[in-house]
Image (cartoon, rainbow, N blue to C red):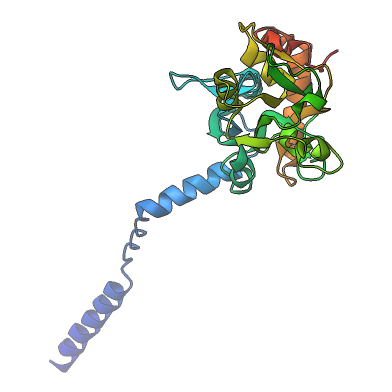
Length: 288
């Protein structure tokens, strides 16, 4: 009886040991919150190398009203030479193009915040050489004074006491506020009227609200297209070059855009797009 009981106890203990060794399935990992998944996806997209086809979103920052380089038309569509060139660069690499239009005086805030990858919108290099990482220059430009032909204003000296308009944060604006530029000339004006866009300034010139506009000639050519009542004074305010401005640490992206520009010049795309904008075509410099 004692022997039988001992055997029963031994068998019971053995069963308990095997029961204790039975594998228990590991708990499934906890599901990530939707916000965490979105943040991870966004981080992966941001980290994608600039050259990865189909993954890189090229965010093109431009002035929403600076024709013929960049603008948004009455139907909400983007257009302009710089817009078409940026789209051509994206097509060349297989990048996704994203338009980031803004008021011109907000350009630095947009770039520094990462809202856009570059400022590409008739952007002047001269005087800003150390402020950005620049692409190769692709267009020349000149600042001049636009007047009505019947205004009686024939020279810069005739602007004394007159109301002169200019767009904020442009090269012409900088020239008229630079002691080494045309600040002395500006002091002779009756007033310097600063506008958000040249389109608004041109409408005021037509209406007689101002007497003249200090303007980039390529932009002025576009505004005067089809008009016969306006002209430039013979004297120039200054000259400049346009290029694409990047953040200083975006050398890889800048190099890739430069390489694409060279390829688009070689295959005729740059020239073909330029011919669509006769007001600036003669000022384009690549491949010439």
